[in-house]
Length: 261
Image 1 (cartoon, helix red, strand yellow):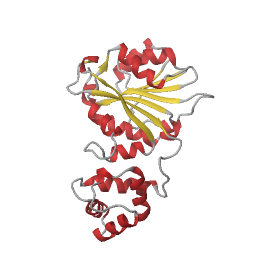
Image 2 (spheres, one colour):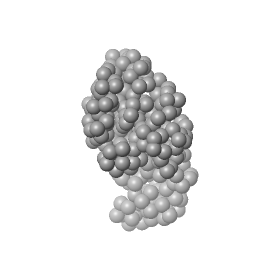
Image 3 (spheres, rainbow, N blue to C red):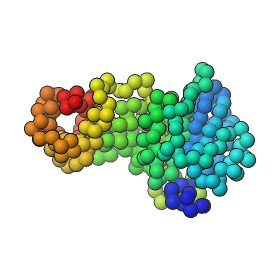
């Protein structure tokens, strides 16, 4: 494993059954364009090349790029950092979809996910292998400790579910943590109508910035506003300002954001 690959904490998927199950989630056809993130040694690439119309594979490790290009002549293998690649420039083929599939390096899983969510208007569906803890946070419902800004700012734009857990033995070398496959379907429009999306994002982050505090106090601290203003906004939105952020649904956050905009 090269230094760059080790630094990213990447573990190669080697189980072909797991690779097939991941690709089955998005079920690519010859009409679809698939972007693969982190092809590594090609377990997912082989399955995608067999089924999809066009495959672009983003690999950060130069030592792996040449080998992948030789093994999969029909795949466009690019040396690229998946955190910064321009997904928004993707265009769906006629009658087809843009899909993203990948075994994301643990250390950069969240920034890659954030980049994909920002580019959501160019993407239809995703199947992403992540550290299990991160995948569960993304798909978490309100009310628990795993639910937070990552859950809300993904579920605002996507249907999210943990499709399966993957044991360490499916990788080489086996990771120290469990992995899970996150299945995301991008919604045609945000789950709730928002007047100001950027403001919504900042309010959600502020609310979860100090989780132990009441909603009003967390918002006051995070947004730099008087606690009274936060309480009044919550009251106007029909929300008890003494609740904790983790108990609020996305529509409740939208109502709060409308009062605080």
